[in-house]
Length: 137
Image (cartoon, rainbow, N blue to C red; front, side, top):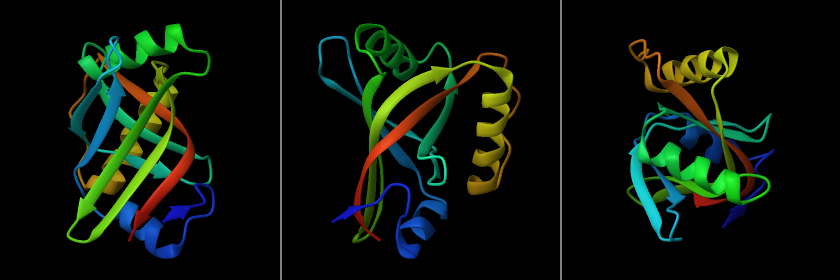
């Protein structure tokens, strides 16, 4: 079932506000999918999903490589599931390194996951401009 990324149903949005481990799928340089567990925050007002990460991680390197090769960023997906409920958000990802973007993403992560990550000078944000949402929440 598809959803409007900017105007999700209350149930879909509530599911994205619950504490769940998610997955992020990024394209490797050879085009194969790289899937890893992550924490994700969903901001329907801005049409964004955010993942905080270390700038040296494979997922960040994949996004940067695709970002350089493709106008508009890397095509990625984030997903979560619990029992019969599931939700996927898709879009174009870029890596943000500026202090304001990182601080905002950390605050959003802390709100959703109930803990503030320890300081990390190598932290970046994978910011996904969403264009597709689907799931059953």
